[in-house]
Image 1 (cartoon, helix red, strand yellow):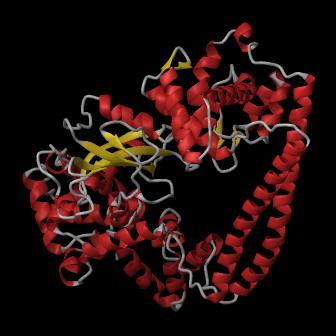
Image 2: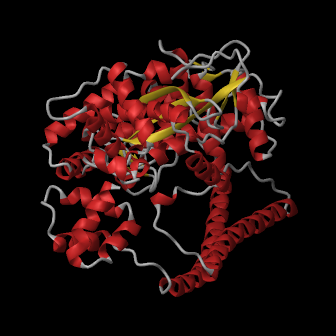
Image 3: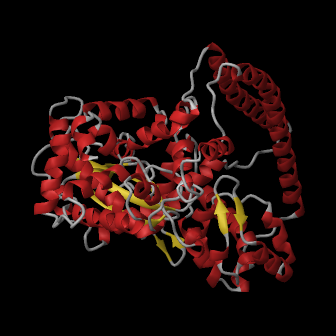
Length: 572
């Protein structure tokens, strides 16, 4: 492999760095990281194989097969290099002192002097991990699979200065940030300086929001696909967390000795265009008919908004005509923002004995009013808080007494999931629980974080404090429900009409679409090739499923040449 790196001109493709940067890294890992050659493998070979794995997201079994080495030996050498790289953390993850203005700010008039006291940006990302089934609900957040929530700070030259990984995927970003500011190895902010943060994080004198231009994660994940993959990792939760830290250290090292302007420009363009990583999707040649489909989808969204506006304004006009008034209507985005605001205030200590402080309400009224352009009051927030608590109590009281770890919430379907025996036991105990098997629950994790503790300590008397509705108010609510039903029915009718025309366009597009092999077809083709054992076939299968263009190229070759082609693909 070392000969291939030196003479094949594929060094950057295989190990994600130049030959010169690779040799310097090996010397540094030997002198500063304590890495040593073994009886059968040199330092260069160990480091090259480690970089080959993290730079291509290869499994242990495949690498062992590829290099004709046992699985245990591959794992041992991988962890030796991993530990050696992490030992360089103090050299490459250095928090800024704020003594000087960063070059990227000082040299641009639109930034200087306005951001002269800014020392970097903070953002978070989710990395998929493998955890035991009993722990999966704590890690399965908005992604739908177990992840860890990683928070990092970086400078404007894309160097990471602080990394905290390990929090469960269900943990809110604000809670992770609070930990970074209070733990022993905390994130430091010099006096008079500040960080730019994402809009989902709390606003402080040292944290200015919103900022959505962080590109460091994009460059990092493009360079090291092992932390970008959405398939279940081979390595344990702890090792995957260490791998992310090691990738950040290598990223900073390469910015110093092997700067890749082309890679950074690609990520910058994706951020500006709000596009997805091209390697995560099959190629799609969009022609005029594709543009028509896109316009139809946009048209569908515009029609939905038009119907909503028409029916709602008609409702207001009818109310004014007959002298009645309409109550304040909360939308799902408003609930999302309100719940996140309450979590932030709670994390900041503005919720005492389950009650928000007057200043917290004042701040939330101002924040939500500006965000949605509405004239909100403190009473609006208090009334909505009571309603949200009431919604939460309806399903929480049914589940209370059972282990919440037995249930997981699917963010795509909004449904609670559990093993069949768990549901049967619960329904036998509380028949009303049956409806929660197929009834969506919005904002599950947010409400659990805000209300679970209060609900668990409430007495029957305190639970009875929620107001009951009078008959006249019930009739009013029923009318509002009729309006909502009519509204959604009208929207669906419009959506169906546009959807039918869109399907016709999609059928036309199928004829010009590049061939895409299904998962079943890929597996059958690999069996026909007969080149890998049952254990090894899964690694090749996952490799091709994630790279549809390589699957097309491989299966387009004559059968007798596919083995060599596969080795070339996975070696590059």
